[in-house]
Image (cartoon, rainbow, N blue to C red; front, side, top):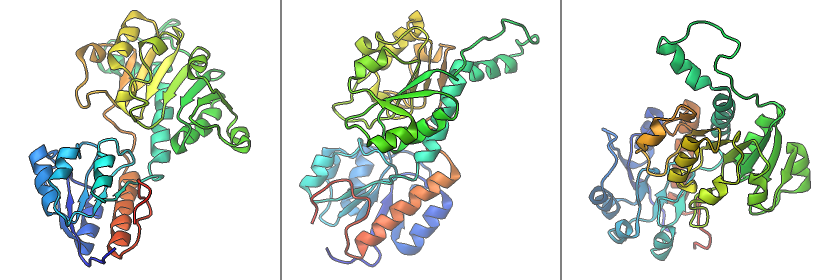
Length: 329
C-alpha cells in the first residue's frame, strides 16, 4: 500500500470544529461548510476527486456512486458505526477499504436508551408537554399514571457492545434481562450481566415487558419486528429502538400503538428518516427523538479521532485499525 503524505480528504457533512481543525492540519481536507446533505451528483463528484471520502449515515454510497470513483479513491472512512448506507460489496469489488468508528458511541447510546426505558413507561415526556401546555392543575391520585420499571423484564435484541451496556444500566434499576443474539455470550459474561439467553426470538417477545432493539441493520434484520412479531407482545409492553428504523415495520408499529395492542414506544430512529408519519407524530404514548444516540460533545469528538486515526494509519501504508471488511491486502 503506497504512502500518501496529505491525502485529498472530502468530508460530506459538517463535523465538530476541533475535528475539522485537526483534519485541516493533517490532510488536504475539503469540508461541507453549510452542512447540506450531498446529492447523488455531489457524492459522485466527491469520489471522482478524493483519495479519502468521509461520509455519514445520511449519505447513500451506492454502487452507482462508487462507479464514479476515480482510481485515486483508496479509502472510505465512515464517520459513524453503522455502514448500511455504504454498498460494501461494490467497495470490495473496487478494492476500497471501509472503516467505521466502533466503541466510542457505546456509553452515550446506552445512556439514551436507558432514558427512554424510564421515560416511556413513566410518561415523562408526555408530562413535560402537559405542563408546558398549561393543562396541569396540580397533583391528583390518578394523574398521569404510568408503569414502574423496577421488577420488569427487558428483552434486548442484539447483545453487542451497546446491548451489554444497556443491560448493565438496567440491572441497576432492578430490571431482569433476557436477550436474543445470533451467538450466545460466554457464561461468565451472562453471569456478570445477569442476562438470560433466549435462542428463539418469538418466545422471548411473548415473555417481556420492555423490548430494546440494538442489533445491526442488515438484509436479515429488515423488518425483524414485523406485524406478526408485534402481535406476540403483550398490551403492557413498551418498544424502544435506537438502532435503525428499518428493523421495525413502522406502519405495523403505528397500527399496534393506535389500537392499544402495545403500551408505547420510544424511538430515536425511523424507517424513512428524517420523515416521520403523521399518524406516529399524533400519538401521545410515543417518545420521538431526533436520532440523538451519539449526540454528545465527547462522543462526536471521539468519532472524529477514530476517523483521523484510520486515515493516518492508512496513509502511512498500513491496514487501518477499524476496517469493516475482511480480506484486504
